[in-house]
Image (cartoon, rainbow, N blue to C red):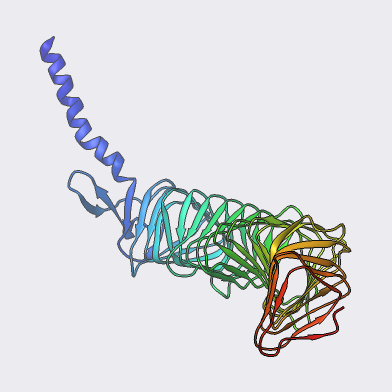
Length: 444
């Protein structure tokens, strides 16, 4: 009995030595020369015992692990379907009747020519650094690092991270998963449709049209600039702390809807790229960050609740009476004109106004209290009245309009340099100190 048992174990061991390696051999195959995928003569199989590749007597099956090295071109025809693992640094040609859905490990320096094939890449920790040309489409699932070029439409259902060189796609990129931009998108890319999450972790300028139906996150202090941003009412733009985002567009007029949130230390910049263009901000804009209005005409018509600060740097920005304005924060100007026309009166207004060669006009029909007003070549006007509690400083500029300016007890107005022009009713309960050209105008 013992002899029979020992004999059985010996037979099983011998079978294991040969059968199991042979089973594994069929999973790992390497193209040794160019040719058709189904031609076994171009393939070698990895022998797990000898740790060498040996000539294959059959072609890979649909679930094999394959590798195509540099200088080798393999063509897949005849309705073949492949869903195994693939490492490609050479060339692969896919013809129209093919199904190619590899659990891709890497495409580094390789090239795939697609003739109408819907390519689907799966797998985790995948590196895509090659080129796909031709027609058809490419979709990603799992976790993929990309820095190559794809001429066809691209669909993402997993997590794609753009690393290394800029990522190029010639067709439409539709994002239904998470797309992380670590480097940037190529300037000549096709349009983008974002239905989920786009994270910008580096300085990026997005030149193609970008339709946002989901979430955009700006995470970099040097920010992201959109040259042609299209939004929907349910879309969200999130500017993280210390980051910034700039909206530019060649369209005229142009309307932004949805929700924009600006975190503390973050900046939203608007600058319409069209000559004499108009940007309509119908979005809900909120947060403890800052908004800076740039060149040409910007109309704020939605909810505006910014507690950090509002700046005008060029052009004309109108916070219209149709807007629901809760807060504008501290107000500053370095150029252009900011017209605050909202009703009812502002609730969340900052403690200071700083004007440098810009104009700010308050026309809400109310009275506001500021700790400080600083004017250096700019102008402050409108029908609203101002009570200033600490200081007004000027090196040249203008306070005009029909509202009353009141210097509270202890407030000091000081001037230097160019004349400071007054042309609005003024009540002084504090001190006025001037030097050089002093104060001029028609204040009463």
